[in-house]
Length: 152
Image 1 (cartoon, rainbow, N blue to C red):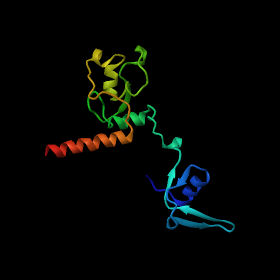
Image 2 (cartoon, rainbow, N blue to C red; image 1 turned 90 degrees about the horizontal axis):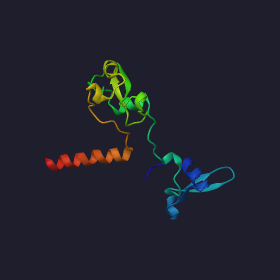
Image 3 (cartoon, rainbow, N blue to C red; image 1 turned 90 degrees about the vertical axis):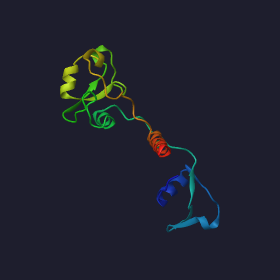
Image 4 (cartoon, rainbow, N blue to C red; image 1 turned 45 degrees about the horizontal axis):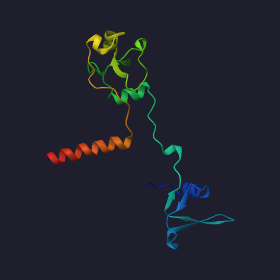
């Protein structure tokens, strides 16, 4: 459920993307123009979902990787001079994907070089993964809070 302004509601109704929810006389606003009177229902229901309602995994880029890793080096925990590092180097067949890119400080990135974390003896603090849908993230947070309340 969400609220839309009356202008958006009229467009959705006229284009056939929404339908009135109630047909009760009291649940309409009258919108008047010089040549037309239009009854706009107070509640409408979308008949089809548009592409803007679909959530897509964001592209792998510096800003999103830094945000995912909380602006912290995944090798030493530093928050200064951050860069991106491919866990499995691209020269060794690693891809530029969410599961293979992490935040690293300049020093750790240079120390690791063209090796895997195991070869360099530099374990990752957290395993990299793609961002989750916001609803899933909210549900997991809610679940954790419920478990903590049950333990108390």
